Image (cartoon, rainbow, N blue to C red; front, side, top):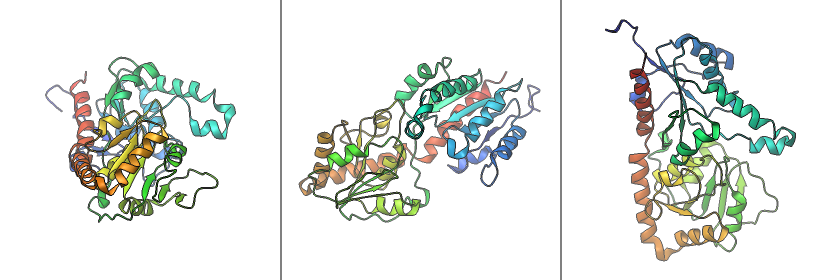
Length: 335
């Protein structure tokens, strides 16, 4: 027991990996176990004076397992502190609305009810952009002071020092909130091939456009061989695309990203990358500028600055240390 008569408290988490400092946390690993088993393991591991860090980004594909665990922990009479990371949530589901339009009006009601249930005096919601840090609480009607900003990080790990190539093509990848019709319009008249790694489906693509889903290894290979990486984003209430453009920056690729929440938290326009308006002509002008050999020196300088910034400010160490700082603050506030 400590000097206050309480048993030592721990930081318990379902997030594995990260910087070695994260090893001080007690991991409850969900890999290789069922949803119910993982929730049971978490409930067994977490005491009332602990802080538990859970992954709020685990959606339908993972049966919302960490959100389910957070709901179960809320039911305890003596609740632990619960920190939900990567809360990239919207009231509705665009994908579900396309597949089942009749559910479009129901999903926001269910979403708001779940988030209200998650909100309690020992809950903290982490978001990935300063825009969401301001909007997330009012959007979900959370209590004051329940939202923390944790900028996202580079996730290259074994690929961080992989050799890069320049094969002349424009590369875009990812699915979340991507605006590929905008990119296709922007590429009209641009003399360069375009490769898109995504499940996005468009009929009658031009001969110079290749679009298909890729394995992670193939995705990385195309990223490494690109001339420039473009991340066209839809306008939304939440941020998206950070993993793609931060990884590209860390590899020394020039990046172009359309205006959206979180982009200016990670990119300094004109110095570490280009941020452009969500218009085909603006995106086309930026792509042409990067591809123009007359601008090679300026583009190379921007790519170098982006590489240094991504590896220094947005490393996995920075991300996990932000979470540790929040968790330690919660431990210090134990009753």
